[in-house]
Length: 501
Ligand code: DUC
Ligand code: ZN
Ligand code: ZN
Ligand code: ZN
Image (cartoon, rainbow, N blue to C red; front, side):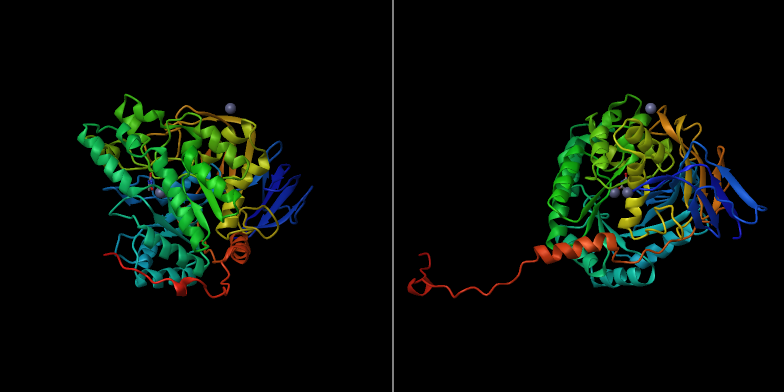
């Protein structure tokens, strides 16, 4: 479009520096960043005043499930309401998941998800693809998705037994092939066999409520799978991205692997930064069930602070949401059996404010780190950078004007999401999105969303992200076992083997 936009008087914040500067946008692309810009001609120029505000790269949510057919239901926010809510909260790109059933085509799943998203999205999006079974056909399809569809990340589930779960041999093969393709292997790290056994036992004891969900999936179920995924990925030198790191135990496992130099990245989600698993014992069933997601939120109330500290020191890299909303009626599918409560919570609208409140307002991180964990790191890992994740000449004009002083109280009564519950209900957040620009168009301003369904675009992501693969190759050089020709054995010749009698 020929729309021209000037963002005046703000402080431009990237992950590495902040500068007082105006930003001039044309054709959806940042054209100039600098002080006192006066683009010609002045007529037909839309001016946004950013005085006393921060001008930040739009948020990237690396983990959503819009209109996801899951656990006998379909998540309530579709690609329209979901992306509307995203831009209202300062997120300008989501990466959702195409999830094929076991035995079915990955490419068909990708095409199906894309056909759902394209007519509805109000901001840019991309798609990870799940590998839920293993065969030569799956390999061929992964290759084709990388080469022809712009997919550079595949998600493997270690949970959801019989539905999506892979065993260790399949994980090994999938990770190994991701390495060959230059993709990033993502993993949902929970021990699915253990969850199934624990659930059976709890149900037989008569524990059917939402607390059964957390009792069946204690922290070590997540930590063990996280360790196993790291071990398998490291064996084949595949970069690993652990989605939704939810517990202190799993985060510790991931952090120590990173400190050993392994190429692993951790994503945590707004839900476990802004609330916790004590909600599973709420006496209102609907309230407790609304918090059911996999992995579960943790009852240890020190978890949110712990995870935020790890984001601040780069042991964790990315904040996302796992946005997968179900309303109370959908959740009620599991009223007599916690294993049937559709798993999922909200977050896509509130993530930026929750991270600002718990991260920056609390003093744990600065504004640059905030940009890193809400946008830039994701852009680098998934090879979108510097088109996304940065405000610089030539970058896409996905920009948010952020008021660090304003406050907002989160509520289902005022949110833009389609479901009837908000897990952050009543939370007061400093840090408010006042305007959102998507590809150079103002899509949110002064509390009003001004979007057109289908205006967002699918974004291709080429393989071999330099940010990730530079490290993979360095490590390959250092850590590959080099076959050494050893001297012939001595001694063995003089021994006569004796079989047991
Ligand atoms: N966990 C959820 O809570 N929802 C969707 C899928 C998942 O892994
Ligand atoms: Zn998951
Ligand atoms: Zn998910
Ligand atoms: Zn506060």
